[in-house]
Image 1 (cartoon, one colour):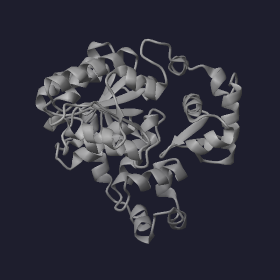
Image 2 (image 1 turned 60 degrees about the horizontal axis):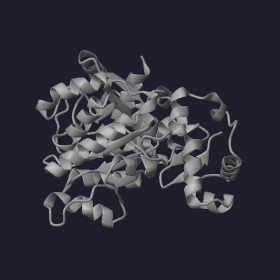
Image 3 (image 1 turned 120 degrees about the vertical axis):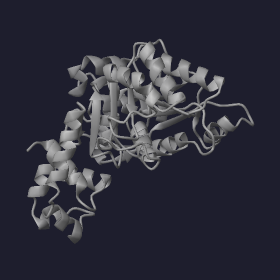
Image 4 (image 1 turned 45 degrees about the vertical axis):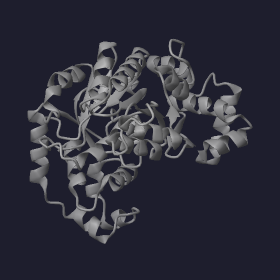
Length: 372
């Protein structure tokens, strides 16, 4: 049996949700080891009570596991589990990452540099134009565009990324073989060739409404920031924005015309603290600390997999100072700035560089910890 079998099996155990699944993998490292653990070992894990431990030890749904593996094979989908090195690093950091992703296409290392662009399924001409320019310009800078392959802003964002020669990732609220809306089949195939289509839902799962909030947390989880282009007050895009906030991601909103129903959601986000965005430049400067069409050293270094910085060599004195401060344990960015006696903007840039170098990890809520 392989890791996909045990990964699916663990996800089917009653009482094991996304949070507990990640907690178990963090502790035991492999799903197979979870099933081999003693009853006492299992109950030592926070959140694993008597009933859940018994459910793990008495798991007997091997037939369902085999069926899910067979169905994935039939539609030529691969399965990424939390154990896989190829599991998206950004998504791994959220509190409740999906135990597995069914995927067509490929997620690459450079897809770490991703921005989600989402919005209304029935956008205005203004919304369409803005989504095109932001997605196109970000993709031209090498940023992967993440969205939900829905009608409207989502589909526009994917298409513009592809037309710019960039990469894009679509997150479905259905099984990997259920293309919704159906008119996006050609787009689906293009994304598979120049990015990836992913879902946490098993093969043949229909696009039920209850699935989409869960889908939205993956969209924000895969990204460094989320751009809401156009949204009403009840738009699902606002759910994506809420997930982004809880995950410690930057939230951007395109301002709309006062009184326009399609702009009420985005304008409210701006009132509540989302960054007002008018172009890709605004996104790039906020996330990567530079304007478009300039050099992004962190991005270039990451692409070329430069070894020196990853080993902690050639760090500036300020970076060394921040790294030393983080030996005290997990710290909020404001605490890091105070203890290192540097301004917050400088510390933010240094922390991003250290994170991309693999020297530190960012936890939810702008908390940073030094990697051992």
